[in-house]
Image 1 (cartoon, rainbow, N blue to C red):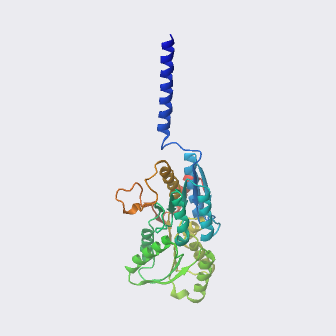
Image 2 (image 1 turned 135 degrees about the vertical axis):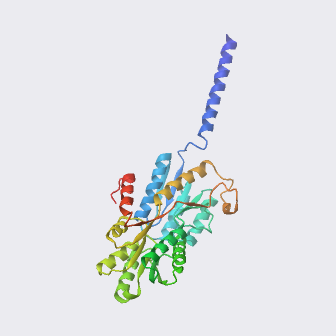
Length: 338
């Protein structure tokens, strides 16, 4: 009887140990720790574009049941964004998703995070010379090229163009190059002026007002490479009852879409900020549970890299022909009215 009790005791112990090991194995790479904390450091976070990205990040965090934080300046302020990045590192974030405003300024903070063992993934605009792991966003050159093709159609192959941009950001440089390459094929469309709005839509408003007052007959189109200036340009043209000018916008905030419906903006290029941030947290979570051999590696040169160099979330043109269906799809997905 004693042998029987000892036998069953040992057997129970072995089964219990096996169950514990099996549970540990099954949870490895798929479970989530209470210590997991993911930070999304954004730029100009009150802008609808970044609010949509924040919603995607929060949704993914809710699905994974992990802690998350969406931080960043309320206006265009690269220094404040660099401080928010440093704070995320100090709080020992599990992973950081970063919207890059000034690649040169943010490079040091990115490299410090990676040196501390925190993976950094860039979103929307890249910092390619930093040690960030990879970039998630739009193929900005292709987005610009598509916009340039549409602009060439609108102008019927001839005209002068003013561009509003923020040239220090790589995504907008790529968009501008796409526009230039598309327009060069026409031979008779010229970009006569490139305006740095410095993150302030009032510069687009004031510059357009100046042009309407002094140079109206010399400008045939306005190209806006970021989200805020398109609606400003359309508003000025409408206020001064100026017709016959083409406005190309970027992104899909409510006012931009309203101007498309009213005919004040010819088309806008729609990106997917919600998708960028949603996928961003998923990939940061995967990096935590399946760590690469080293974070400090240039994976772009490795044909067998465990991570991508670039994740293209896509883009498309929205104009009067499809703006209503776009709004309906958005409402059905999010419940938003605009």
